[in-house]
Length: 147
Image (cartoon, rainbow, N blue to C red):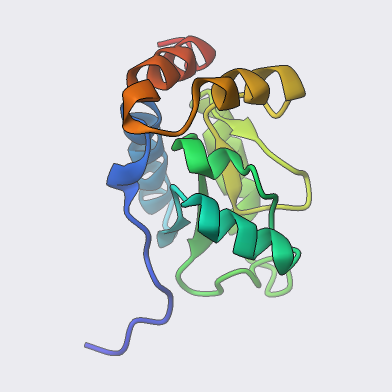
């Protein structure tokens, strides 16, 4: 077996309702002949701050709350569009079909469990990122996903 080309992030860190839908998305991508990699799921505030400092995200990322995941293609990583691979377009289509939401338009690997609106994201952020608020965040995510 060859070396691992990309790190894989822990899907189990996502809120339970989002995790279930996200796992269905990964399975669907495999059914369609792709090799999806959950590259970035839940982030610590420190990770979010580092990413923001490098121009790759925001300090108060929705990833901190277990509500977002970035998925890349095992074959091309982030270069699918340049390689004419349809991975990201199919990822978005299938994610939307499962009730997920698209984040920033230029952030092709990113899907999330809440709408990309200030009101929806602020509602999650107000609950906090700690374990004590996980059930409340998950209830809000369930409502957004229609579960």
